[in-house]
Amino acid sequence: MPRRSPTSLSPAASACAILGIEAGGTRTSVILATVDGKVLAEFQTGPAVLPLMSDRELQWHLKEIASRLPHAPVAIGIGMAGARSEADKDRLHRAASRIWPQVPCLATNDLETALAAAPEAPRDRPYVLVLSGTGSCCFGRNAQGRTAKVGGRGHVIGDRASACDIGLRALRAVMADLDQKGKMGALGTAMLNALTFNEPEQLIPWSVQASKTEIASLAITVFTVASHGDRLARALLAEAAEMLAEDAVLCARQLTGGKEEPVAFVMNGGVLLKNPTFLQQVSRLIRKKWPEANVLPLQQSSVWGAVRLAASLVTSSPTLPSSAQPTATTSFPAEIADLTVLAKSPTERRNPRSQRLDRISLTDGVDLMLSEDATLPAAIGQERQAITRLIAKVAAAFQNEGRLFYVGAGTSGRLGVLDASEIPPTFRAPREQVQGIIAGGRQALWSAVEGAEDDVQAGAQAVAHRSVSQVDVVVGIAASGRTPFVWGALREAKRRGAFTCLLCFNPAMKKAAARLKDPSWKPALMIAPDLGPEVLTGSTRLKSGTATKLILNMVTTLAMTRAGKVISNLMVDVNPSNVKLRDRAVRIISELTQVTPEQAREALARSGWVVKKAYEMIVAKKR
Image 1 (spheres, one colour):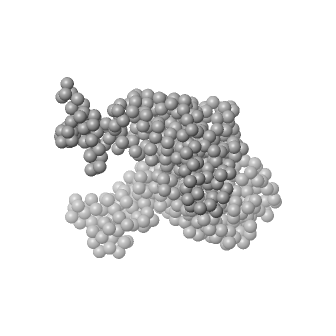
Image 2: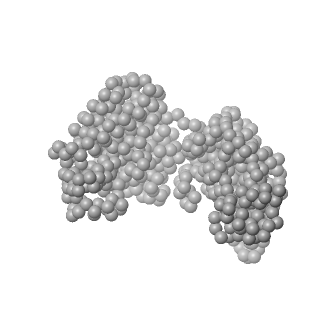
Image 3: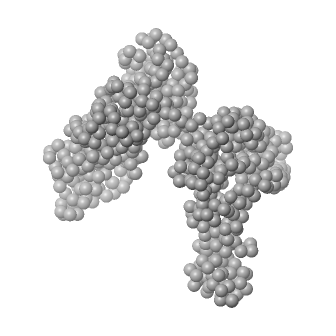
């Protein structure tokens, strides 16, 4: 859903300076125009892809655009590549608001702006944007505002029938041609010429290091050679046209529920618009696969879609054009979102014992932090019954081939991933049995990912992508108890029948959860010890982080013990993957069975160094 400012203006249409910005991996296009279409300024600047930019870089990019405008805009529409989630759009909206304060802004992705630039057609039917440029994607919206997206996952695992994909397929095809025939055909020769290479082997190191844009440039050669009748080049383009038509129709089918009703297919991108024969080929295939298709090549630059969306903020019509109607998303419940609940969290209060932290000696600082950590066991002990219940649920899940999922953001997410990563070597458990999910994904393990924790939908999607079911347990970890990503994950997990638990350190969150009007948001269990304020105000990597580690240790250690992974207090399912652990395995077997270290090592060797199997072999022999 596009992110809109709540502000509204109603100046005379002819006096409005409307700013449209469309940014992607190749360039950023900018138009400043009046509502009636008079262009006041038009220029291009460097590329911009939201996930690849820091907040500082994003602001400098927008600031440069602002410096080149002859007039201040009264409304702004921005479509930027990579602005996929609501958190992404919020981030883009915030950046624009710093450059143009008090100016209404609609922030979204470049697919929305391209769709908004579509030629006029009956707006009661679904629209599908068929985009093929350096990358490719099919994106659609129906009259009810529901969207569908096919492709657009980058040149490594997606972007079928894009310029980059055509270039890659051509490289592979000409090398296969060389292997089969001992020489390069017309396409291979033309590609060598385009790259100024003298021999085919030079393509190998180049292809490894070439950028997406460089590989995409080879598509020009493919189209040129195809126009001269080369069979290989024509076959590659026929294959690309078939894939693009397939994706377009698949997108349409998602929007219509499979019914073959009228759909407008909007064609955009240089691969389509700069190659009329290819455009006709794709259009013909779409009509063949979807008889009710109305194929509409985009007649103007898609940045005009950003202008159109911005104009909707200042014209008399209070609604967006139907091609940009917001998608229905899950709203974060007010009872949890309420910042007064966050303010009540002990983690947000100042600790009276540490108010001279910047002035006390290092020795006193060490003593202070140790004394604060010493209060944790008693505080955690107050939640003993809830922790015990969680462990019992996890143990039952393990015994029924279920899994344990930790979900968190920042420190909480990293601790969940850490505990999950320790399970396979400690208990010889399959890697998938305990899994960590962190907001922002892998990158968030070592650096902050802007806005990731505020995305409710991303949390729900992360759980859905892991195929969580009724045999699983999902534990959301959030020091303050308020993290939207965690709540989205817990809600989706509950919908799927999993046992859900929220671990936090804000007792006020229990009362807030009790007030939830929608029961689908309420986790089955809440664990909320009161640890008091942190030594460093708000730094939940301190006592909250330590308490999280203590509780997660209890959960997995005792659940694995119940699952038969421990005998006495020894790890009989440890994975002896190095010298130290093999020595430990020998000692475990010796202590449990009273055999000599040599006998223990021999038994372990016979068992393939599976400790529990070696133990059972020795016990059976003694009987």
